[in-house]
Amino acid sequence: MQPITYFNRYTGCLEQEAVYGEGFLKWAYGRAVGRATVELLVKRSLFSRFYGWWMSRPASAGRIKPFVETFQLDVSEFAQAPEEYGSFNDFFFRRLKPDARPIDSNPASIVFPADGRHLGFQDLSSVSQVFVKGQGFDLTTFLGDPALAAKYQGGSAVLSRLCPLDYHRFHFATAGCPGAAWLISGVLYSVNPMALRQRLAYLWENKRMLTRLATKTLGEVLIVEIGATNVGSITQTFRSDDAIEKGDEKGYFRFGGSATMTLFEPGRVKLSDDLLHYSAQSIELYAKMGDVMGQAL
Image (tube, rainbow, N blue to C red; front, side, top):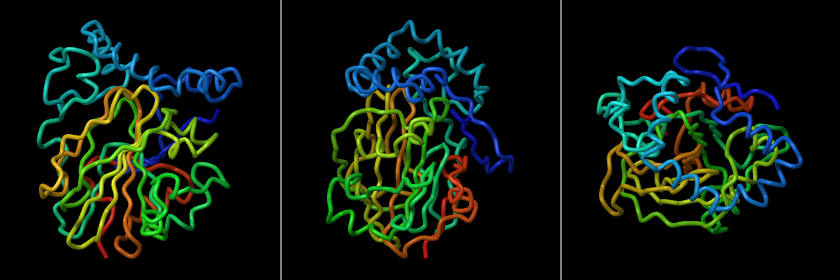
């Protein structure tokens, strides 16, 4: 399998991703016996619940220091010292210091909802290549509602993929008033590009949570959290019907790689040039939560 390459907005360079569990992913999605195991066991929620329980045990805290050292995480950003976490899962959905992720102050900007690697589509209906040629996005199946899908047909979308080494809390990309999140049940395939290159449909077969966000200038923004293998749960921390500000916390993922998708009605936003440039080549853009994702039109 090809290595995962992304463009880092901050270094200005193409970089190769350090993949947690790379050997397992290559086996699981690159070999016939691995794919069979994924279908029989790994995609099942019981597998991820067990792994989540295992990573919540006090003994798992011993994994934190080697993980930090291996992936060279910036400890100065953490709200707590690594040794203060009671389990690896507690560390995994850690909070950061308030000033670690400044929120862009331009009133017209929308911001990335999470740290991660992002793909942006100015017109989602015209996309026919996501990671590999011939893979388009099935919005109706993804949203589970033909009428809702019609509302966003021809709209803009940003897929934000969180790796296990990323900060795993997700936030609101713009201000507004959110409704209650609702669940679409599904299985739990990996959302790593090693898997999505094989089959993009994993995104709309996985467990998802949807939230409608009413805004003053952008119409209704749709926010979707996507579960994945070894994600024990998607936890919402916001309160529905309460006004929120751009950058406010929405929730967090427990252990595992996962993703969010932010969808905008047609003609509402202009996504950032670098995001569109690299996405057109199926190259993800690395950017942090609070940084500019686009502008309101």
